[in-house]
Image (cartoon, rainbow, N blue to C red; front, side):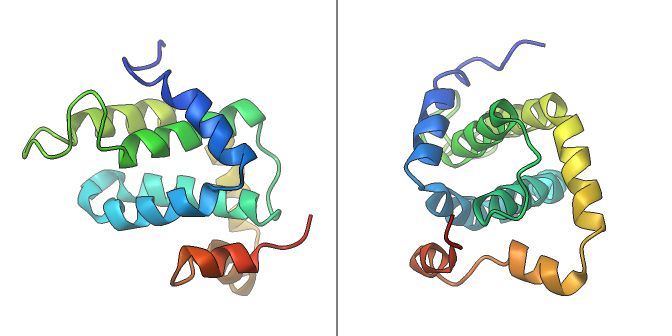
Length: 146
């Protein structure tokens, strides 16, 4: 299946964001915008949890291409400049939902593996791995040394 129109331009942005260690800023933006998703909320939370676990070094069993695809999808979701601007009430999120659905379908196997890994973790460990601190600065300070 082909990528949604206008999605490809977010792939290099995702690569740059990952290489510069800016993933926490994206995850905070996703958390702020996430409540508007309805049924996709749990899927976005799963992608956000995967990104947090990857960023903290707890989960690395994901292909670089899948990680970039997920990050690009989340970037598309938070970007105010996409195919249909978010400020258009009623239709502004339609393209975001379509892109997130496409990302979920494209990386479904990777997400299923992450979900299986997550299901095997102790609840106490997951609370630490998946917790989003109060501020992006706090998350940067929490990052374990490589």
